[in-house]
Length: 143
Image 1 (cartoon, rainbow, N blue to C red):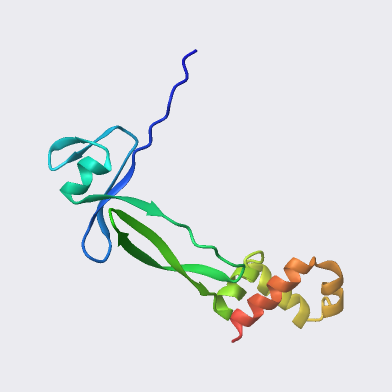
Image 2 (cartoon, rainbow, N blue to C red; image 1 turned 30 degrees about the vertical axis):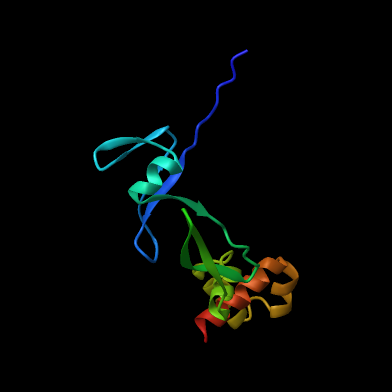
């Protein structure tokens, strides 16, 4: 029985002293470096100044975002990850407000201001997600 194997040779970068540069990804067994085809392996690429890159995705909490890239080189491997920072109040409001377009916000605002619908009636008729979105959009529009 023939079982095909999938080769993935990874991504190889040069190190400039602070980050990986000129990164090349390949799924083949060889890669072209300086107009020469080189077999993909640490033994062949490291002496030429190319090192395998490993990406580590950071753990991000609900109110956090990925921030700055962090590069490091340890021995013959280059690592890439990111710092994580807490979202600002504005970023959190933007996320919460996203289910309600600015047009819908002003439509509901007019309905409330003109007394066409009371806040209690709106609260009774809108799902909590839209109530939260309206309140977040209001904070964004009226800082």
